[in-house]
Image (cartoon, rainbow, N blue to C red; front, side):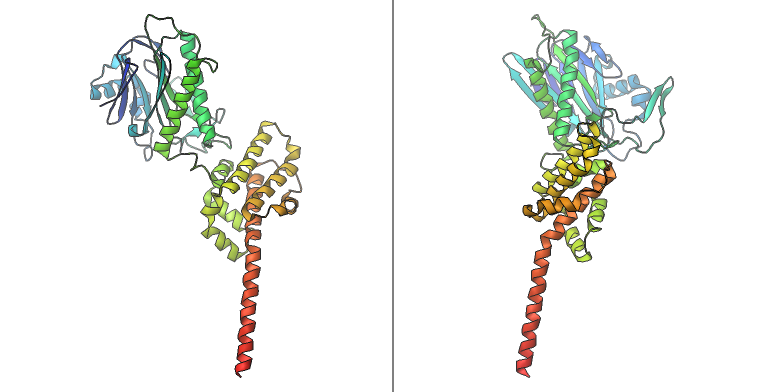
Length: 407
């Protein structure tokens, strides 16, 4: 099914588990594809194929996809009546119905991005520990296999209505990658392999196609050039759009204290348990019943996000670890204020929360954040509990007086 025609040079089709681009005019293509990858000028199609479901499979791709990529391409092309030798293949587990197309233009220049994406199981930060090393016979697993890569890939098809010199075509990939990373950081996507924010997934792929014509080729795709701006806008829009569809990942949905802390080793259950450890049983029960409202309160999320960001600053060396106690204690007090609503108690919260020794580790951060949530929650309901206790005492006293008069 034809879903869109771009600048009279490319048709975008979708059929079942495949989205393919058919070039109406010659294009230069630069891609990360294992077959027909690199710089090519003889391709008629590039496509993005859903090879399996995003969960429940032993492999994200069929064995043929990585053992015999050329055979895998032939198999897909035969199913969809495409000329295999003129096609480049991107593979994923993402649903093709969740693809997002974004088009941005300036004068005669048009840039279009067609993206699919999923990040729930495979988001990572560049430099995270690798799980395999490539050897002569394939890939060797590296110990320790503490985290097996899960499903998740961001695939980008990028189309440009003007010819580019090879260097500019290569620069397109750099600019598109920056746009992808910006989208992930704005969504606060956590790495699944470290306590950092994700910059992509371990299996991301991209293909950039620039239409050939008789005009002079563009020479720059960086951020100062209009082409770079259009690439950034289109890729950012398409990736945020597809992640919203595939993973229900939206800015509003990321308004969560738990989400901002989970990359440091926290889960919903462990967060509740740790906070409740600092509360009396009746208050702990009340917190569990209202946990979702508390951890998604925007003011509380803002304070927790600030604490997590400061932990990053410590890890990156922007702030010295020797300042951990003062800095983190002060900002943890903001969390307690956000929960209790009593900002006049900021200084007393700070004194209560400031650690007695510097500890810049993730466990210390989690403990501090949960203590601050408990401190604020305890203070929020202490006055109400006192009022309820006084009211009960008053009622009891009145009943006693009435009983005496009756007698």
